[in-house]
Length: 116
Length: 114
Image (cartoon, rainbow over all chains, first blue to last red; front, side, top):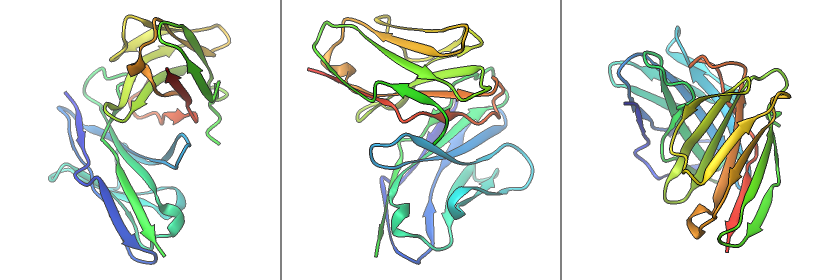
């Protein structure tokens, strides 16, 4: 079975400071990892994904994420947060080893609040 | 804009009724997915279609059904609605079925059952 944990319900950060949103996963095989963002009353927007290769993945809006196999983590980072980054962030995983098809497993989400 | 179009954006209906949610995938995408987002359950995968055929089922209730048509648009039918069915229903699409494919989401259909 595959699962995702986002240990923080909310992350508060001041504008201009680094932002980190944590994610850990559990799969039986190799993971395919994704980050999505949801702005109020909007759909999920794809930010970035890790499939294979370089452990540091760069995505949209200045976000990046680092895959750490030994720690089974895929934390989302942004060097300098903006007020407009305030949103709900979701980590998701698919197990490459199983016939997971559409079962993109989502974490519970982390609310990011960036204050001016 | 993800390119995935969902209608209606908002829907209010009474318990016991039936509604249909419609989705047009991104141009060129053959896979369509339906997800339900609620406060207590989070994001739950319901069902996936690929080129008109059902490919995977998740936590979809027997009162719910879906299909994908030859033009690749999809519909999610929700019947005998209960208060607990109130949620945001997302449609999503991807080019194929490979686990590494990016899944793009629409803006969702807000369903309120009263």
